[in-house]
Length: 145
Image 1 (cartoon, rainbow, N blue to C red):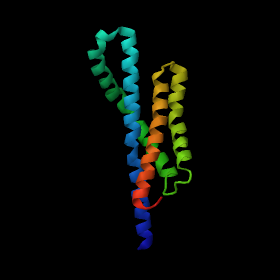
Image 2 (image 1 turned 90 degrees about the vertical axis):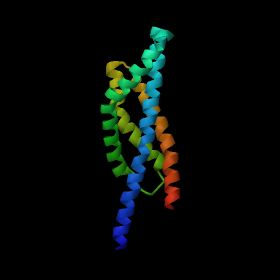
Image 3 (image 1 turned 180 degrees about the vertical axis):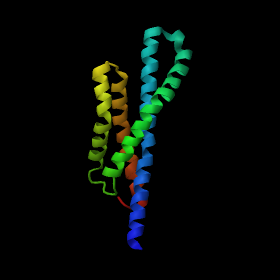
Image 4 (image 1 turned 135 degrees about the vertical axis):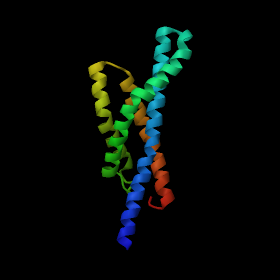
């Protein structure tokens, strides 16, 4: 009975940690949204701003939907492998996740010379640092820290 509770608790904890990935999604989406808006305003001028706000939002939702699906699946797999109640190497685990998930973005940056991929990598790194604080708070709430 106690073993079943421990397994259930571990699975519940992994899912709670996984659901902190909303920080990554919001961080990357916000960063890329601002990057595209600023870069397009610099190219086309301020008069195109109303159209850009809607265009960029639709682009991130439609094109980014595929990206965010892959991101969340990758994060799920890495969270299942790396995350547990031990906070000793939490920052290292998050940096490993960042490096593994950012590898395709870095490749695309080199191949396609699109700076939006660099923006996504930087925003993802910042979001991982914010996520670390949220995970530590979550573990403290469950008494496992």
